[in-house]
Length: 422
Image (tube, rainbow, N blue to C red; front, side, top):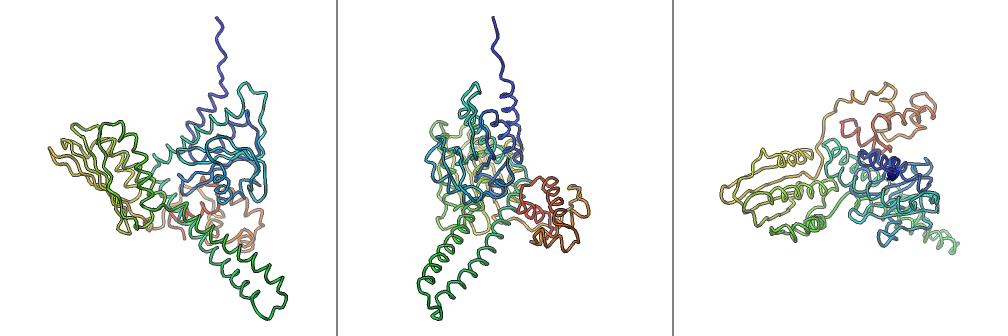
C-alpha cells in the first residue's frame, strides 16, 4: 500500500515557528508563508509585547516606515478573524494588503502586496491562516513565559517610546499653536486663506494629540480593565474547574498599569489559581487587586488544608516572574485554614546603575555611535561629530541592531538605558 507523501517543507516551517524567539518570529512566519502567499512585507502588530508591538520582515522601505497608528486604524476596520483584502495606508501610502486578526490576543497580521500562489496543493489563504494562528499563539506563550531580561527591556522600551512621543507632541504642539496664533492675527487680510490654513493646522494638532494618547494607551492599561481581562481569562476555570473563584474589584480610579506589569500580573494570578486548585480540599479561591499609586498589590487566598509550600516548583517559577519585575512574593500557610499569597509589583522600573555591556562585544566606534544615539542625535550629526561619512554611521547602526538583537533606534536607546547608559 502506497504511503502518502509527507509535507516536509510545511512541517519544517511549523517547527521553525514553534521554536522561534520573539525577535525572529516575523521573519520565520514570512518564510513559512511565502510558498503559499507572496508579499512584499509582513508586519505583526500585538499589544502583548508592550516594548516591541511591531514585528516586521520584508522590504526595508515598508518595515522601516509602517506606524502603530496605521496598524491600529487598519485593525479597527476588521470586524472579526475573517481574512480582509483591500487597500490601506501602510508606510505612508495606500497599498494592497491582506489582514488577519487573532481574537485571543487582538493581534494583527498584515501582508502587503499579497499574491496568492494558486499552484500550491493547499489553498494559499488557508495555509497563511493556519501558520498565523501558530505564530500568534507562540507570541502569547513567549510573553507569558518572558525571562527577566525581556521584561526589563520591555519596560525600558515602553518608557522610552512614551518619552519620545511626549517630546514630539510638545514640540509640534508649540509649533502648530504658534502657527494658529499667527494666522488669526488681524494683520492678515486674506480671510479665505487664513480660514483654510487654520482648519488644516487645527486638524493636524488634534491628530498629533490623538497619536500621543494612543501611544499611552498601548503601554498602559487601566487597573479595572486589566482586572476584567483577568476575570475573562479565568472564566473557564470558574465554569468547569469545580472551584469557586471570587473576585474583589480594584478601585476604579487607581493608577493605570504599565502594559508589562498588567500582562505579568495576570499570568502570576493564573498560575497561583491553578496551583491552589490542585491542593487538597480547596473549594473557594479569592483574588483581589489594589493599587497604592506605586505598586500593584495582589492577594490570592484559598480555603484548603494549608499544605502549599514555598518550595513547590510552581511557586518557585512564579516567584522568579515576580522578581523579574523587582517585586516580592510572600506565602503564608495556615494548617487547616488554607494558604494566603501576597504579591507586590512596582509600577515603575527601578533605577539601574551603569551595567557591564562587555557581553555586547561592541567595537570602540560602535560604542561611540551608541552613545550618540542615546543622546538623541541623528545620523548626519553623528557623522559630522565623529568625522566619518553618514553611510559609515548607518553601517555602525546596523551592526548595533544585530549585536543588540533589536529592530529600531528606540529599542537601542531603551536597552542602553536599561544598562545604565544615559
